[in-house]
Image (cartoon, helix red, strand yellow):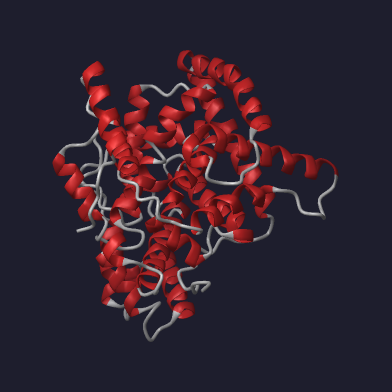
Length: 405
């Protein structure tokens, strides 16, 4: 088990908040133990498939073709499919008993309303975690969010967000949302195996790369985190909608190989406690890798020398927006560790438009037509921004990619 220790400052804060509000900021001892255990837990079903194929005799290219073929025609229509692939699809295709399709769709609708802001606030929160070696080392080694590739990987992740929140997509067999989710799962497993064998990885201190606990944090970063944080920007998410988006993320976790039956929070308060526990047990051991990742991301939005006119202005606008999100949603004492753009123009833009967003949020509660328009327009703007950046490139979610060092 990885040893996790709550800092004295967080213990004092916990006592103060409990004395004033009777609310306990820390999760139960059982959840704390489950979170520590989850640091050493992976995804055995997908790991068997990747070890046999991508990292085995078949090799990355043929394995990718096999997975694509199985997604296209169904694994049952491939007579010589490896047993590990059949097992993976059997688990992936099984809809757990706890899934409520109506709640899943309500949660997807919340993502559509948040739109571009979901990705931006989620990424700012993620950058805040790069103080931790357990998170920074895999990202640095794989190169996903380092240097010039940072924006490309963000766009790849955005493709997944866009696909899974389409109406009805994640529960529709054969949908692009489900295809991308399985590829994300296989990619994570492949990176986990490569990083775990790398000399820079400290298994005694960090357990497994991309562990169950770290995947859990990602799900909270798509539900509880933005649901609370985006209030400051005018997004008025109700308690019922928060519970729906928590349920939606639980099912997303099932699709990408996260165990969501033990410590996964049943309430927003439990989700907040788990986020506080992560913050309380930080090691601040990422060294130079944290600045490499954080300081490379926002500048990756800067316009290239080939851009002119409106395209250049549009790129500068999004650069300032992203910098503004980091100022608002990274913890100030963590943000001060890094050399980042000031973010003040972007922050001002975000706060100035917050009353307009709040007005639309209030109107949508009174009118289903406004709610439908708000979902559709927010999603369309988000997708248009993504398409503008991606151009003709195609996201591959490449499980065969080698580590960069």
